[in-house]
Length: 199
Image 1 (spheres, rainbow, N blue to C red):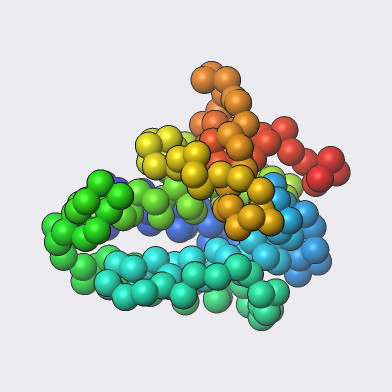
Image 2: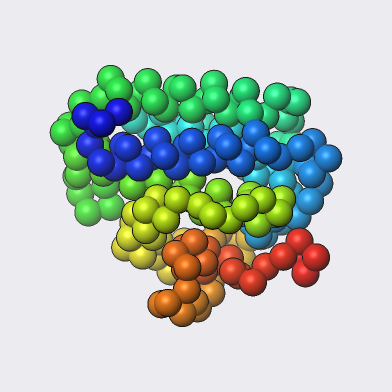
């Protein structure tokens, strides 16, 4: 682990964090709302379980099978995430990190794709912790890295109403002095003051 590039170490920590939160989430919490717009905890966990396999496909140069949650989720959430996470770990371990891949700016080293993955698992860790009432004492370095990627890449064209197929809502202004996960949540269109009771 120590000989990996620093972004991959941060991804591993982000995955560890997500796995810990999923393991502490119970089936009784499946129907709870989350800060992710219309998603329930079940939808969010399914998305988190599917993410590593899709990201692994992208690392291997294959086409990911992106799609919204279906609600079809087994009972062993932690085991399913661990299996999916293994695919992503293996993909990065065997990848040529310096190979060039398409990017919004033309081409970039494959390793640059890890930044989006870090951001994804960071913001969804906050989503799940907030929705299920778990500790929000989350890894700040993972969120800082994810926020740097998000502020550079999550542009206005990706924001808008959910029924128009937009993945992200409008930015929610958050003070620069706020905790990093609140700033990350706000940039991704979440209200850091969100609570399950307030919906």
